Length: 194
Image 1 (cartoon, helix red, strand yellow):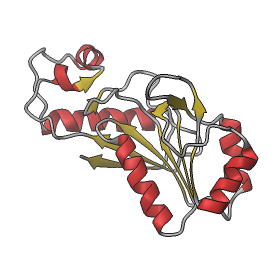
Image 2 (cartoon, rainbow, N blue to C red; image 1 turned 30 degrees about the horizontal axis):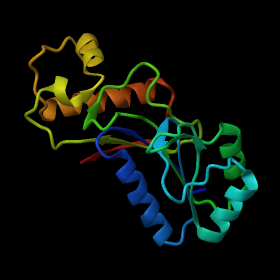
Image 3 (cartoon, rainbow, N blue to C red; image 1 turned 135 degrees about the vertical axis):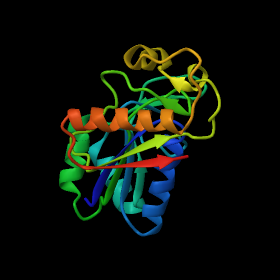
């Protein structure tokens, strides 16, 4: 495996997950996409949690999106693969599985997010983390666009009328970096501004 990339933050995580997966697959790399939180189930998602089915799909197609179905709503959701299954796929497929891309945070369609104490959910073998920050709502009130704004306000002592600007966006980036480093993550951290 070349990299295991966990994507966190808000404002375009799923889009970035698929963009990276398409690019690596186009280069002839074997790619697995999953989550450590929740994602919408897409048309070709494998929900079997069967090692052999997943292995065969990665070998045959060079790409697999996989997880466990958790809801039967009009847009069904999935949670990630069990860690022991993901560990086994990584260990047993060194020649076929080049990249694992994990959506490792949820933001309920907000452009920005202040993470709670147990977030983001980083898979232990992660080599790289990309923090996604949506910048298109600059000038709007933080309380209207930041997921978990009340937590941000309480922990950072922010006034009710603070608007999103470069300083707020950088503060959110710094909060993520600190949480990742405090959790023991020693890999590469980069930021994707959208």
